[in-house]
Figure 1 (cartoon, rainbow over the protein chains, first blue to last red):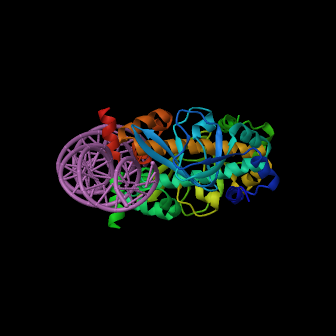
Figure 2 (figure 1 turned 45 degrees about the vertical axis):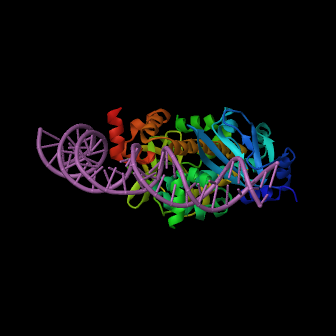
Figure 3 (figure 1 turned 120 degrees about the vertical axis):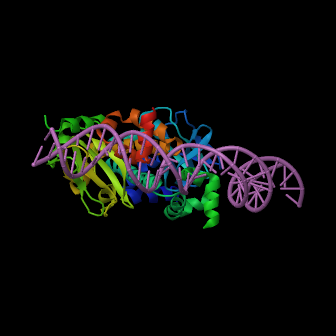
Length: 189
Length: 189
DNA sequence: CACATTTTTTGACCTATATCAAAAAGTGCC
DNA sequence: GGCACTTTTTGATATAGGTCAAAAAATGTG
């Protein structure tokens, strides 16, 4: 069935009825993105949420020519530019596919209407955001309290699948360490 | 009026009717905490959300004897232990008052029932979590991309009021730099 | 399959920030 | 108003991890 991973993931976060889920699905636009395709660009407003059915994306921002990976999204996850979506402002993040990706987009103004009228969808989104906040806070604490090596090992445990699907550079920039250091860490271990 | 700051803050995030707000308020328990009072302890389950009407709290975690400040909450904000609340699990965070604090608590199981039945409250919580996520992501990016000095200056701009209300040690540990380094940064500037 | 491109490894050297320790300044309290 | 305690400053030294550069390995493509 279409939307299988997305559906499972939504229900994993909150009990959403078939009817409500269909309200969401019926506004979906299908996208087949090749690998390395830029879905969202910093500074360009894109008012869509992307639901990933298959594949993997990476969010990053560009500072002084260096890419800093801020997030990975895989099947069942959603991705979008935080500022674009929340404040309708040009954002700071790029989102690109790491692998060929099947995704469905929905315009935020439609989603916002659903939030206002459909309590299940509002709560699904609330819970998703709770979980992201928790994860991000943990990632941040790891950064504050651990050495590069420890952080790498924690990441391997926390996101083993993602570590296997992206290259060393992306992992390094997500952890906030240099490529050479990460390579050395891996070698010694 | 009681709850003034809390009310303003809720409405700042989402249009919540008087009726819905009262559903929340009627379950409030009042707390007058002195300064340096530990509201929440790591490892101890506390299934309440605290709404701060007046005062300031600090969330931190303890790693190898060192405190790492993870968040500040002031009037209008809420505070709680992330893991306790979301997963009903012993958490990793302490929350203590920095100043004498007037707060109101509501049990999470009541709040959860409100989420399930009151769409305005569900959406208020969704929006709060969106905003926290955005702020936290920005803080994290600052950590990945800036020097200690730059981070301090950004913090001064982003949270000028909080910087004036907490001591240097708390700011340093929030920024992830040592007290001596922060003192030197301040001196040279 | 060979060439171009990307990714990873390795080496040499450097610097921002940590750590440790002690002095100085600030704060609260009987 | 002086004593205890906390917070901040300052100094000396150490180090984790950065930077730059080049080689090696892997990957993709006509």
